[in-house]
Image (cartoon, rainbow, N blue to C red; front, top):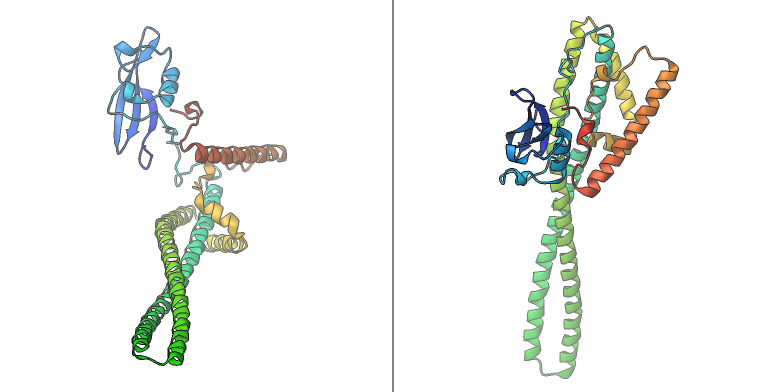
Length: 325
């Protein structure tokens, strides 16, 4: 249950001792089990600290205060409530009258997500190729500036040596004028060389960022590919023809081509779980459909507000009561 969960994730369940509870906490890479004792209408972690009138008040307290009060080795507060998973149904085992419709909806969602990742990865790969080509040109230019700079330094040394050998004043003035011209050219070359170095550094930074992004997209692409294959396999088991599935995939591909780039970038950053058995209502009325649309908009607004608050605060501060144990 706690796999891929961040440190500070917790849940509360019934203890093996009747009437007591167990707080399960992920701290670092380990899972810690902490017994919650309930006695005489109060509760706490030990018999000496039965100062809470309910498990809810205990959890709320340690959402704000560190567990170091109980154990010096637990330098954390209760950060992230663990959502209760749907054990009865999974993405691929869907029973009931509308199981085929659910899987077809899931097929559309997975295909859209898959194409979105592919398109972004193609863009990143194209940018990487362009950046690497540009970097090579800039490095050649920098090498040329370096060689030219060295050549002008040599010429400046020759002029200085020749000036010591001259005795005629007009020749000395002419040499000095030539030396000033060469000095200005040398400074110009040096300035361009510094600019080229800055440009090379910027390009190398952009290449590194795109390489990191490319590496992050590969696992997503592999996972979506596996889920697509699994979904199609389940549909084949339900006697859905490959022709019908290919038609759906083509329709989704056409829609994906018209998807605005800013929207695609936003959706790519979100974790979308295509489990339509949890939300798809095939027999709802128009009034109920409008009600669901209103709830969806409200949910998106709440999610956006939560995202902004999380960014500003740097930590998750949601109510643990909003989640099931």
